[in-house]
Every structure is written in C-alpha cells, then in structure tokens.
Image 1: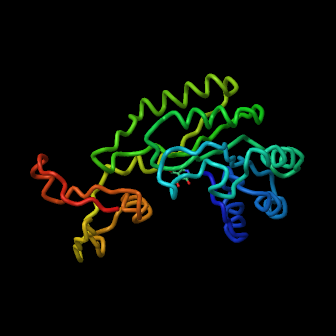
Image 2: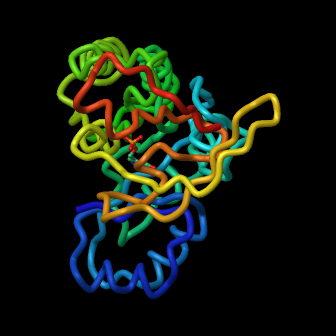
Image 3: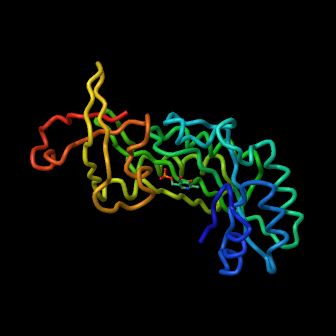
Length: 240
Ligand SMILES: Cc1ncc(COP(=O)(O)O)c(C=O)c1O
C-alpha cells in the first residue's frame, strides 16, 4: 500500500507509519523532514518527480509540467535523492510520477519516463495514472494495450533492466462501469445552450464529479437515458 498526497498532515503520516504502510510517496522536503522525525523503523519511500511534461488535457487535470503544481521538480529531485540516501530511517526505492489525468495520447507517458531516467537508476518506477477515457463522441482514447506498450517500450529504452514498473490507473478502470444521472434544473438559450444540472441520483464510485467527467470546462457528453434504448439517438446536450 502506498501513501500519496501533496498535503499530508502529521496525523496522516503518523497513522500510516503506525499501520505499517509499505511505501510513502514523498512529495516535498517537508515530507522528508517529518518522516525522519516520526519513523521509528526503516520506511520505504518513492520520490514524486515533476518530469516537465505537460500532456494535452484540461488544465485542471495536468500535473506533469513545471508551473502547474508545486512538486518535487527535476532540479530539486537530486537534492531529495541525496538526502534520503543519507537517511538512516528512509529507504529510497525509486521514483514516482503522475503527469495528469484524462490523457488521450500515449506519447507524453513515454516522454515522462525518458525525462526521469536522467536521475539515475532505481529498483522501482511508478508512472502514476492518467489514461484517458471516451467522455465525448470526439474523444479517441488509447486502448489499454497501446498505453501499456508505450510505457513498457519507454521503460525498456530508458530504465534499468529488471526495474519494477508500477502503474496507478484510476478513471480508465472505472469510467465505463456506471452511468451518472443528473436532473436538469434549467435550460437557458443565449446563442449557446446552457444546461444547469442539479443533484446526482444514486451514488457513483470515485470522487464525485471528478470521476463522472462533469468538470467545469473540461467537456462532457450527455448521452441522455434514452440513448440506452436507441443508440442512434444523437446526444442533445453538451455541458461545458
Ligand atoms: C498520484 C495519482 N495516481 C493515480 C491517479 C489516477 O489517475 P487517473 O484516474 O487519471 O488514471 C491520480 C489521480 O489524480 C493521482 O493523483
């Protein structure tokens, strides 16, 4: 089990260490300081790296570029690696990256693997999640095979032989497992059509709107319940 997070509280770190969490993914120097203080036995860690790769996805879903989130950027990563290697309590297993979500092109995953390879050789590389899914009729999502081929090829080309490769797919595993029903509250026509939606009906897995794809500005295709009975029916509403 991995503990992730860019804002881990001391209480969360303590709980994870008490529970014997296998690996803590260190996001910043503060994580390193607090782990050093709190750990009472050797603790395995990965360092989260910003590989400087910004995939084409909605800005709110992109985390691989330098300016978008404060993560352990490549230029600080070496310092973190040195510090953890010198630690008596922390054991550095390798690197972690997550360049973003809803990525519809596999090439940025390969670039990210190449980018972190300059940091040296490690036993473990966790390349995060990010494989996109088909939210709108225009979306062309890569297949799982294409995604895995890209990452495995990049690993063969740039990472040490025998390194363990970890992936953390999220949305691509669950997105097609359910539909989310929203009640339309109001429809406004002002040259463009705005559809205000109200409460969701029923529960959905994952993190609410994040998993449903109904994220402000990121595009969502409303299939409408009738589409299940009549696949030829054109979707009537696009929420933006
Ligand atoms: C660290 C990390 N790993 C994996 C995921 C899952 O990403 P996705 O659902 O895009 O596959 C996320 C999503 O935010 C994440 O932050």
